[in-house]
Image (cartoon, rainbow, N blue to C red; front, side, top):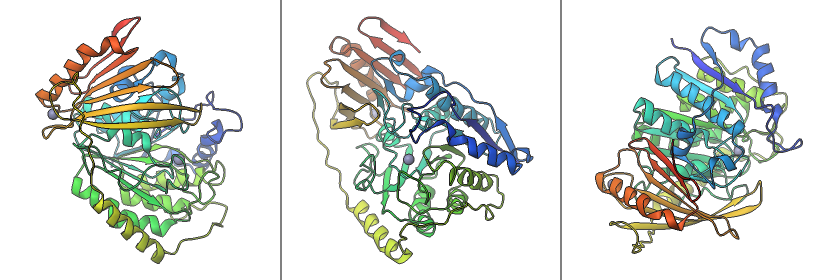
Length: 441
Ligand SMILES: [Zn+2]
Ligand SMILES: [Zn+2]
């Protein structure tokens, strides 16, 4: 049998501050634990060395503004690049599955990046998905985000993509950062129903997670029939996590992994550095390698109030009903300068908690029955006057959408400080800046 790939990138020289929860020690105890247990010596575990994500792969997925040089990306490029290393090993058939234990995390970083938010700047899974599509011809991908926080960045990147099923299970946004991830967020006009949010109440534990996976998540994945399942493996659902209020154990995480059978797992959050991370990571790794994880036990006991399964079942059936009932309300705005087609307008406001500013976005997507539709995003950071734009021609774009994308690309220049062209279909990534002209990646 092929091995399970594992890769560590602890980013020892990157942090948001000495006392910050997302800090350098996050992977140290895990490394020690795996070493002590002799896991790295097992014949069915293959360790890989970190890599660097090429800027073309980053910009294919995310618009970095005002320019990639203006953002501190060093550690993030290695975290994303490390996910690509395992992606390549999977694509070549060298591993049966893999777990990238990297930091900084990525799932709060969205389609546009003006800074760091929720500890994230680059979306490791998003970059991984588009890399595998370009280089290995993968077409249908499911991403399941089991971090306790809503995977709002990943949702943002794939919101209009009919070939990516994105499912986020998280603590209800009414009680936790980033305050989004509700059932009515179901995807854009060309990908309606391809985003699924399952906000769970504080106190949700192992058996409840298993219930939601078995009754909702797994049937959806089966129906979608993806070639690849990616797990955004956040570990802050653990009952000792200091940032959230859930009740999942290390064994619960092992069970989640066993049920989900991800091809590739990428570490996201998890801030109980000694009490949870080493045990949760061990359980996940053992489950991926098809080994027994039922002896993995963390030193502490759950102390938070527990939600009985019966209560949770009725809560979840209510959620599923809400999800089914949610109807789209598209706002069509065919402004004069837009190429022919029906353009759906979706405004956004995004708060960057790390640096404390707001990004104002005007998103437009060309409604299309043949492809994911060209996406056009305008972004700015008030009170600064500079405006940025992103034009995305999606994978497997139809000729009309491709033409609409190039029409936009040809005419936008003068109105913005920077414009990014993401022709994902032809793998043509170009960045135009008012003072420097076009750079091709
Ligand atoms: Zn998290
Ligand atoms: Zn189209």
